Amino acid sequence: MPLPKVGKIVVVILTYKFLYLTLIVAIAELLPFFDKSNFYHQFHWPPQGEPTMASLFTTWDGSFYLHLSKYGYEKGSPACAFYPLLPFIIWCASKVVLGNLFLGGIIVTNVASILALLSLHRLISEQQDNDTANISLLLLLSCPGALFFSFIYTEGTFLLLICVFFRCLLRAEYLRAAIVGFFLPLTRATGIFCLAPLLWQLVRNRAQLRSWLCCLGPLSGYCLYFVIMHVYAGDAFEGFQAQQNFPTRPSLTNIVNMKAFVSSMCDAAELHGMTNSLIDRLLFISFIASLPAIYCLNKAYFFYALPAGLIPAMSNWFMSYNRFFILCFPVVVVWAIRLKVEKNRVLLYYVCGVMAIIQICFLIRHVNFYWAG
Image (cartoon, rainbow, N blue to C red):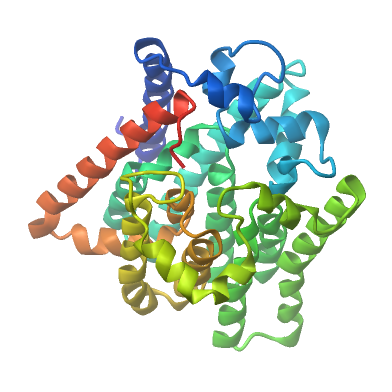
């Protein structure tokens, strides 16, 4: 008996996830050039002792989230730059797996990314068609930053929440959208940008006055973030201060410094350096080029994508931009609409192939504690 469409996409995503995790283990075994200097000089997991197999899955930000799950927020710690929802979920999940934070983190983030991909496919199928949804997933999973869906990062959790948020919002289910929106600012700083499409839909649909109370969902989540930082780190703005520990010192004040932004845009000295990546800047250019098509496709998509793709580039001067890019899902939707045409299929496979090769190179670097994003 043939599988229904939903069953087929579930099988495809589960197969992809299994093969990807297998690839990570294979890279660790076949290409072992782990950078121990980064391991010992950065936050690392486990906190004490030599690197283990778990260390390959927790390089860079992964170790921060596990640190927060174990120790919580501490004043003066660079870990305060990270948001609390994922560490809390990992801590809860670890109770189910005998207190193993690493195992809890891997399970949580991979389950979240699987559900996120399914939710994204469902959202695009409902708003466009099944073919567009399939190609959108292919494009998204080919993007260099998609490797972070398989590690202890917030990308999978955030994508899941934002897709569920949009499904509720576009059905005018404002209360459900508000509930989901509450958790978005607790996951990543860009979560508060869900307010923009929410406001647009309320205006567009001439919603009743009580529906406007749903804006309190994301706002309450953001307020709770500040309360958590005040209670546990001693300062509501400790997270912002902790950002100064990172190379580009991300700040909203950077947005008004157009001279520095233009200078940063032109500083593409390496193919993929931490602060001067040509690849990150090319992704930003492709984002900017996609904005008119996103605006024509869906105004709610546009009012989310505009700040979600623009502000991180300007406030963080392109550092880790490939990770912000994959969460601007409307970009891959408009790409898919253009590339699903039969005459453009060769271009589709070429684009996916090039991006997938770059992603594998990033993956090899990331597993070995070299910079990938």
